[in-house]
Length: 307
Image (cartoon, rainbow, N blue to C red; front, side, top):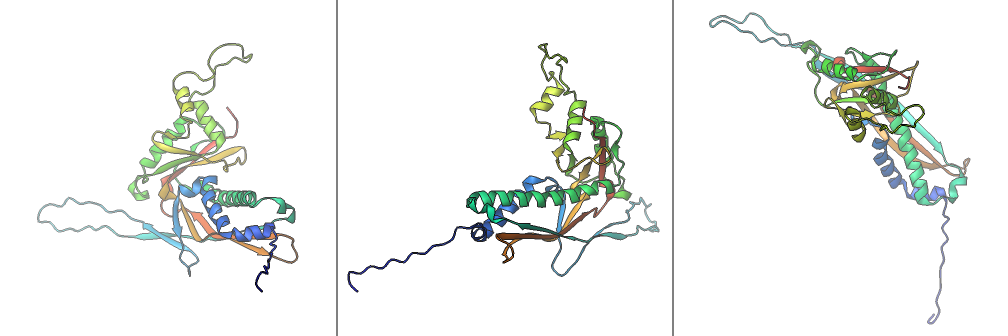
């Protein structure tokens, strides 16, 4: 009636489950945006999307070379070059992340939850892709450089560059650009040490000599080192870990390694009566392999002893 005012009040619970459900699209966007920043290798190799309805990707490549003839005028061409193809098949592997978030996290604000969940999902997903790709370094067939029994040297990188640029036509020809060097943090330090960045202070630390001497060492440090060696971009990969007291990096053309993806990482949020809080499930289907010529890359070996 006239003069009567009615107020309705709605109370919406501010729970972690509700916040994540509301932020589903933002969660995916944040995770996808963060993943390339957590691991370098996914951006340094050839990527192939497997179409729906296919369970593998078949990558063809030339398995023969052509020969130019110099016939005499009037003579018939009697020799031919055989056109031959071979192929490599890469079959994806199903991956999954299953995360339960406790109700104890309900007191976190929405922004904090988004930051924590997105960052860790991106790190775990990026690490898995990165580790899968770096395992292919052992399958590169050009001559390994360095050795598991000693420190990595600048000369090893110089040699790897020459090996890739001198691949014979029968093995694919010179490795196509771009070419990358991916090494562990320890291998990076070994190269820095071999470049002269060892410092000049005495054991007592009482003299006045500079820690980094002038010249090559100073230039390396000022440029943060991870720039390029001999024109080849260098990337540090913290997910390359020691195995049997040795590190295995990679010196390779982008075309040498392929990441075949049937299903990129997808995130879904669920709630179940048996668990107090949201459940996050992330699923992907991919695998890596050497699709073309193995000589377009070399494994970079070193020990794990600090300089």
